[in-house]
Image (cartoon, rainbow, N blue to C red; front, side, top):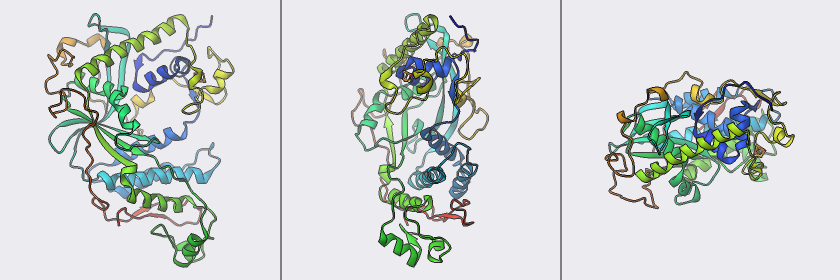
Length: 433
Ligand code: SF4
């Protein structure tokens, strides 16, 4: 039997638990063998870029500056990119969504109290009340905010390709979402008396660059206009009229769509948790580490072949199908990493750790903590202050409900890009005009 001398990261995070639940073999590849694909998939790149933009949206920082900085992230095209249009289209999506986000939520009246704070806390054995030795639970909470009504909330921001219509399956799933429970549990353990979770979700566009119809081409040629934006290089003849939308033309159509359907792209919901929910989560956490520990002890990293191709192709598909396990040599297209949780070390902008609190299992004293339990003795003040004693299937909708243009920053967003190699800059017009 092989023995691989790789220090195993003893931190369980939301993503590592999701990986383990999806497929223990995939967890083994990622967190025991410590390998990962040389390059991230598109959803990860897009999500990271968007979060990097959000991190830059600080008081006093102009939205165009934020968008420009994110655009610059795409200026260095990685060697593995084979389709430049697709690469720049991804950049356009992130930049337009960021500008739209600022327009949609720019004056939401929320006060940010803490951002990107990491935690590393013990996992408690529910039977004994003592911390376990093998794993801790770790993570990084996006934001703690003060809502306009004075309540304290965790804001968790996510990008998704799934529909975010109110009452839809995506929203329903949050009722039992593991990450929400993890973050709420961690916040209480760290002494943050939060009242609720504000789930802040951004729907990635479903539309993609399309062929230009004759009328669009003619209008572009005659007026330089497309989807309400001006592209003078086409009118002047500096650029030939394309048959398909370039990334910049696609961006104009996306911008128009965001302005017309803001609720399709942006939603904020309050998500409730009852003490019994958190008790259930703590038990699940304990069970999860037991299952992973059992796999470690027995080498039984069993496969879940139902997860190989859906909802996306497993990143470890090739070595897994080739039967590469245990992983002694790093398979082609993969790298071995020292840190299997880089997301805990760096924020989305690559900045150093900004943790407010870290604690080891050794120093943990449950008696010092106020962690609510379902017996109600310590839950006071921890639950959504809406008088509800039970979960409501219709969680409060925290959307502001304003019409288009309500948050229009009123400026012209100039991007310092040159996607078509013409030397011209892209121009992003404000939404809601
Ligand atoms: S390819 Fe399938 S069985 Fe193999 S690690 Fe991935 S999900 Fe698991």
